[in-house]
Amino acid sequence: MNDYLDISAEVAYALANNQPVVALESTIISHGMPWPENAQTAKAVEQVIRDNGAIPATIAIIDGRLKVGLNEQEINTLGQAGQSVMKCSRRDLPFVVATQQHGATTVAATMIIAEMAGIRIFATGGIGGVHRGAQQTFDISADLQELAKTSVAVVCAGVKSILDLALTREYLETLGVPILGYNTDFLPGFYTRESDQTVDFNFSSPQSLSDFLTTKWAMNLTGGAVIANPIPEEFAMDKKVIDKVIEQALNEANELHILGKDTTPFLLSRVAELTAGDSLASNIQLVFNNARLAAKIAQQLTATSTSLPLI
Image (tube, rainbow, N blue to C red; front, side, top):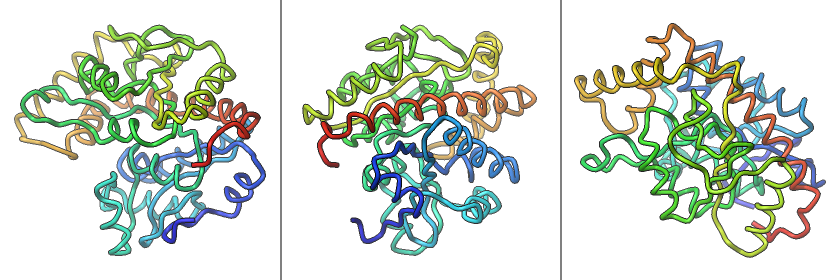
């Protein structure tokens, strides 16, 4: 057990008794939307996981402690503090712990802490990736490297559509990270169900996805997997509309010289403004959809956990 890690009693009991557990990130709480919608959404996602037969484990750093499973007060603390909470990837974890600060975990940091706790499945909105123009800026999300080294599967609605999907697809292939489609041959475009990029393999059930992951890890092929779960059709946005909005937001970011880790929060916020909140509503629904699928995969994994190597 890691000396800096605190696992809630509920999550610890579930893990000890081979019950399905799904990890959740906390950047969506502090950086994803304003208070109190952020905390309300976080609690709603946890409830979706419970309703689908698994235990939620929201992950964050509270007063320098790596927390796996937040209580209501801890969720509210992150929600009220908002963007003053440090957004943490792998690089930032030692600093936030050593200085005993609060931290909101990105996809990468959530994967790291989930693996420390022994959790194999993580539900989020969309993963980070290669930014547009990365040929000049080298702006590539740490999420991709983490997927190559950390054995946690990430259920998502694809890559955030503000990014370069083709370059992200190529980068994941180079790293050996499989992209698994859930009832789709195409990598979802986050707000849209399809893009011009394909997945590696198409699976039709949580059981078949679980079989793939069990086999991968039993073969000691370390690293995670991207499980691409398209946004439900009724909540998908018109591709032409969202592409135009994203282009405008990207141009504004360039004009304002917004770079690095500030880029994604700015773009997502600006896209929400330009769509009068429609993109945020779609974002929430796709997270719910991913939470449902993650819970079902976690259930299947617990049935075959005896064949998995210890994390």
